Image (cartoon, rainbow, N blue to C red; front, top):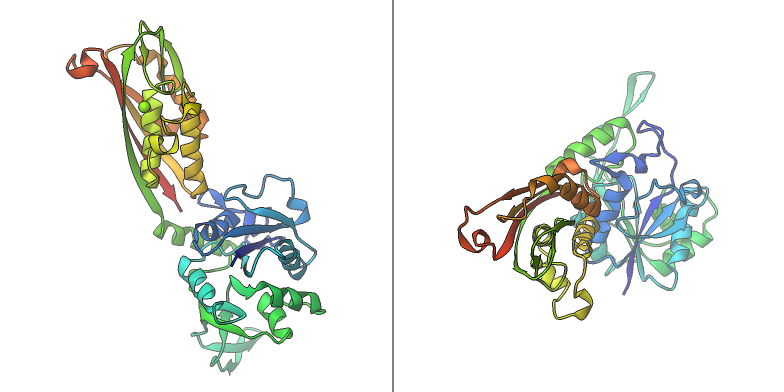
Amino acid sequence: MTTVAIIVAAGRGTRAGGALPKQWQMLNNRPVAAHAMQQFTDHPGVDQLVLVLHPDDIGTDLWPTSPAAEVVTGGATRQASVLAGLQAVEGIADKVLIHDAARPLVSKDVIDNVLSALETHLGAAPAVAVTDTLWRGAKGHVTGVQDRAGLFRAQTPQGFHLAPLLAAHRAMTEDATDDVAVARAAGLDVAIVAGDEDNMKITGPDDLARATKLMRQRMDVRCGNGYDVHRFGPGDHVWLCGVQIPHGRGLQGHSDADVGMHAVTDAIYGALGMGDIGQHFPPSDPQWKGAASHIFLEHAAGLARENGFDISNVDCTLVCEFPKIGPHQPAMKAALAEIMQLDGARISVKATTSERLGFTGREEGIASIATVTMVKS
Ligand code: MG
């Protein structure tokens, strides 16, 4: 069984203010749509992501390339855009979750609710029961009270078995506000599952502010540490934090033995809870012999991005008597910044001696310790 999430991002709505459609506005450093996409990427029950874009947005740098999604060109209406997404996964998906890109705060629980209802229903969608009293009004005055019994506020993702929904879309001749309406027009039964008040749709400017507040509450902050040592051997230079420094001896190791970069790399893997360099790049594998260590750091920083984390800061300390690190600090910071695609102000490289004590004091090798923090919001 393959379940595909179709993120519909082809709308042009700019009521949230600003020149950009709401799904491309920034929310905690990422476009609104990227947050929505991340929730489905992270969900173990979702196998693949399709992003439906407005034709004008194809080829621009508006839409996020991370997390990864297959991009499909949308149509003139929401319905046409969803149909384009459905056709793109025909023969691939058994079930689809159709989600509005402007709902960035969809939770794992809401996705779970829809997926479990799809085990026994052809269609299922989340909603929240209306609890406020509903008035009718005209010209600023209350003209009546609307019975709220049996009324729900519809949300997404709306989930369906693909074949019956695709048939319903192809048979639909009128405009529909959502996929539940399309499904019901074809006689499909759609179960209501529990939605979530936080699964809001970004529409007006106040919504962006409220979403920012909600995101702060569920922020995932991680910290990781890394430690590494390499011994001196014959040679005329060392690599430290991406900078080649002339020295009377070299550091020995399977790769280029950049002890500083290895500590930073391991700190990132540590914060992610995803092993260490040795696990991702086994020393037993000859292809990593003499490898430049930026490969390792690029991989770790890429894993952080794929998992929705922004690296907040990196602090790396090199422990050695020689070579002197001070003159090379700016170049080291710049090298790490470039590899991690991070602002240099978020990176610290510092050095200390060990007062001539221990193996670093006897100049038998260099040690490095690093700390990294990262945030997913
Ligand atoms: Mg190492």
